Image (cartoon, rainbow, N blue to C red; front, side, top):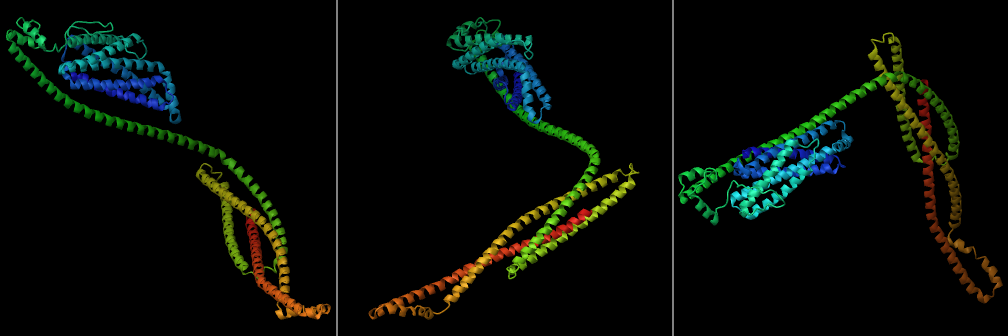
Length: 626
């Protein structure tokens, strides 16, 4: 019963428990709708890990507690060792089940990963319940062991009654819970064997014995066993404390020493110094000093071993991280291999389908040629429509030619449009040349195919190249068709714009006629108001004698004054009219300029449409021939 062996076992078991709890936690995070049993198992594993860590820490801090090889305390430590071993067996079984679920999870990758885990965990619901009950049972047993170690350490240290009593009460509660768990324990696929159950029963008896003896040490002859627990006699490995009454008992007892002795090695001392109490006390002091020295040396050794264990734990964590990284890289590599295999299968299928579609491509090419012939007929009809539109446009040009001769902007626009037409014509000629070359190449390839059909076995690669060339030509023909469609669409839009411009031109003609009438009126008004004011004022003078013939001689001065006022008013109105006419002239000239600009734009669009139709005719004819 080396304390180091128990400490190492508990540390290894705590690491295993943490590993299993981490795996369970990953399952709970992966499966959102996981049952409550898995969550209870996870929390139980976390609690068990904490208890195992506390037990290992208590053993390392109090190595002298495990020195008893016999008696009730020794039986308790033996039972603790057996319980730790049985707990390790249960945790290894749980780890094997979880590894099996993870290994079988290859079917559910990606979005199927969580549903597959949920289904498999639900299938193992009974096993999970069994593991949860086993973990809870061993947790209660190890809690009792931890409190027993703490109680022994307290009695060894300074015999604090309050602390020991608290530990004993916790041990009593743990004994009751453990006995209840043993009564409720049912045989299942994951539970331990009858040997493990018997070991737990022995642990329960040893815990009862330890509590009885420890309560006797704390409270004298009064037993603190409650709840119907068995009270068994026996002394602890530490004996009773040397109070005054105890010292009197020892003093009366030393002259007649017991053959059994006390505290292990004190029997030899009692045989040589039976009657000297001071010598016995000196021996006791030397024994306590030796025990303290041994404890110090053990503490140093344990601290050194703790450092080694910590370093090993760090290495273990690093190795676990490396293992996880390697596992992730392996999974990624397997996924890449599967992806490559699927890609190869897809390429093989495409190769087979390409061989099947060779004949279909030839038939589709003939159908496309027929469609091209239909499109050429439609283009000829469009050409006739364009000629009709040209005739209509020529009539419109004759009507609008006189109004558009004086525009300088129209010439610049026409020049730019001519340049664009030339550029388009050059591009179209290039396309025609490329089409001719492609048609010539296609004819050459067809001749070569006819020649090499007899040599089918040797010319497999050349046929593949010819098919690729045919696909490229087909793609080129499709591009040309798309270009033809775009040109037709532009032609339709230009026809619509031309109709709109014709309407605008008619409106402009009406406005120009109105402007001409306004200019005539303006010229008339200017001719009327171009005479000086004296002539205008002399116009009403002949009316004065007519009026004077009907008036008396006394009223002539008044009439002359009225006539002067009327003349002044007429001169003022004529001046105002002369000042207002320039503004009207400006507005009329601006309106004329806007109308002329619109007419120039209409003329430019008509020229562009004519050039577009010419270029389209030049482009459509070679396509029909090809």
